[in-house]
Structures are given as C-alpha cells and as structure tokens.
Length: 306
Image 1: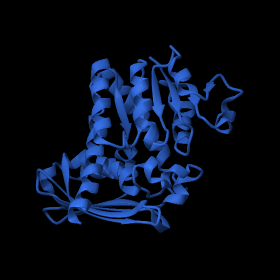
Image 2 (image 1 turned 90 degrees about the horizontal axis):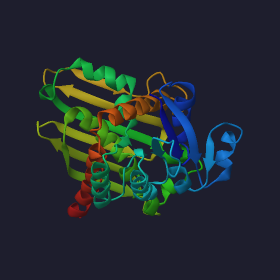
Image 3 (image 1 turned 180 degrees about the vertical axis):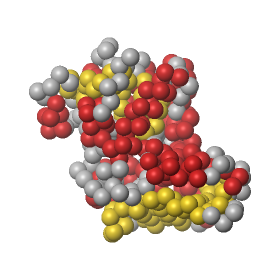
C-alpha cells in the first residue's frame, strides 16, 4: 500500500525528503507541501503536488496519510499536536519538542489517537554506523565510547536563520544536534543519563560548544563533543573501545565528499522505517521523548555545576 505524505516546512532539510519521495521510494507518494514562503513552493507549482501556505489546510486533506514536520524547533509541538488530532501519522525532525512537558503531551496524544509519532534521527541509519555495529556482539563488550558532532552552523543553516535564535532553536548545539548524537548512542548503548556538561555560549547566548559525559546501566564511559564553530567542514564520528582492546572507528561521512551528501541515504531509510512503524502501530514518540530528556539533563548538569 502506498503511503501518501505531506511535508510541512520546506527548509534546508526538505530536499532530502523530497529526493527520497520523488526519486527513490515506490511505496511512498509526496502529495502535498506547505511553507509560509511562497518562493519555496515554486518548484512544485507545475506538478500534481498540492501547495499550501497554511498547514491547517494541508492537514484537512483527507487523502494524506502522514505528514513530515520540518519547521523551526519552536513550532514542532504545536504542529505535531495538530497533525495527530487531525488523524495524521507524524514524522518530526529532531528535537521532537523544546521541553520535556511538551514531549510527554505529544506521546500521550499519540497513544490516545493510536497514531504513530516518529522522530527523524537520521544518523542511526548511516551505512558506516550500521556496518560497525556488527563488529561486536553486545553492550557488555564495550568499555568506552566517544562521539564528535562538529560543524559550522552557518554552512548547515543556509537561509534558515532560526538555528541561531535561542528561543526558536531551543538553545543551540545542545538542543539541535544533541538529540541526533544522543539517539545514535542510545541505539546501541541503551538508556543513558548525563553526569556532567561544559557549555560555551556566544554573545547572543547561543550554545556553540558543549562537552558532555554520560553513563548507562552497563558502566560504559561515554563522552560527547558538540561544536557549531568547527572551521574544517564537518566531523561526525564515533570511537568505540572494547574491553578486549579492540577499537572501532566510525566516520559517518567517509566517502561522502559532497557537503551533506550522506543525508540522502539516511533520509531514505527514515521514510522506510517511518512506514514500518506505522504498520506496526507501536511507535508513539518514546525515542524522541528520551532525546528531549537528555537535552534537558545536559542544560541542568551545567546549571548544577555553577
């Protein structure tokens, strides 16, 4: 059965969804797009894809099964809530919400409506990451893990200037990049808690760097470095040290020489998994909620340190 999809928000990440929906996936169909900026809708004007400037009009379309919420972070809660209440399955860009209370509300609505609430954590589908996880058998074999998520935010954000507005982004690199890293690590380390955080902010109160330490139930030593001021392009990697002395290095950008080109295959997998989760009926935002919890713990760890 073909899943009919609408995209709300046509910012920098939307092109990866559009490419997968229009060029790669036969089991999905892009039927509608929505953005406040008419210029972003122009590429779809001469197609069979419906264009809207008000997301409520898109949600009113009865033939749309699911929506992708790709708007500034501060609008995630409102639009995800309205989409679920309109009877649509939801795939939301990370972070699911800016507060833990909002995340809990969305999970409750998803369960009450029996609709899927899915967060687009794309790095868990990275081909190098998936391959590397086959090199060991269980969490009990792991001694320590370190992850880097480094980029120059101005290059990533493009015209989406809200990334650098703390009230819209949620803070900065912790609120926006943190969920991706936390999910990638939780995917193979299980539930984690933040034990300490060191955050650097710029003159606009945007957190541009953060170093965090975490722990899980297996005693693995976990550390994360985030950086939005990285001048050498991008660095998205993970170092895993096993108890037997072996080291596993995962460079998630290896062989992806074009800027952000790794996202094409990752977003294709997001959409495939989204459809699977809808069919299973068991996904109600729990993983998105957990990432929001870890973001909150990071900010709280810094406060308690001071």
